[in-house]
Length: 259
Image (tube, rainbow, N blue to C red; front, side, top):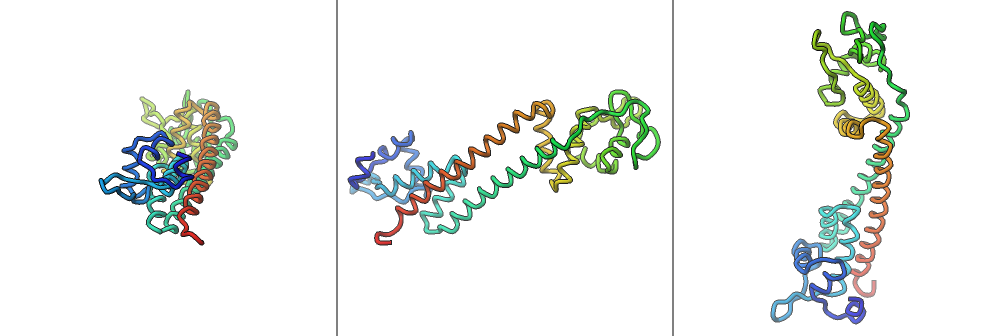
């Protein structure tokens, strides 16, 4: 393939496909999708490609790991249609999403650092400030009721009920009284939700993070998940850089001679 490019020879679909482990049909599909510029045809109707098409394919393959197939395709279509500003906007959106994901990770790590070991008050523990009165304000064996937990967090019981509806906490019900009972895991989730809410995160943003804590089996196992999360973000950042380099090379190749 290098010989073909250097000599300026016409390339067949298979010439482009081989270098990237693709099928010739995939190359044709990319052309039809606008990812590659339109190919010339021989008198017999066969497609012929040039080094420009090879450059477009290299750029697309470089863009996919960082942006995903759909966005990478949209970027290439925009470039091939002469709408470079639209391509740059799409690239900016991917970088903005990566930055937002980094901030989310930082917020989770900050919230976890701020968490103190959660210990449920024992039976008959005094309710915290604003806990209210009556049986719902008293801790029970193996857990705590809504009043003491709300008081400990400095929020209203109504807030905990709202978090429950959003799936952030999942207290069980006492079989005799029907009151909500928060076990250690519920207290942990409530404290994590409280930290993230203080950080400005919306309930719908917090819910999947709480789900990750539950899936990991608690905070300690989550350390491995956070380490993996860091690795994925770093890999995506490097992939965006590689994609930018590939696209810049293609943009340079598209410039008219003499520019």
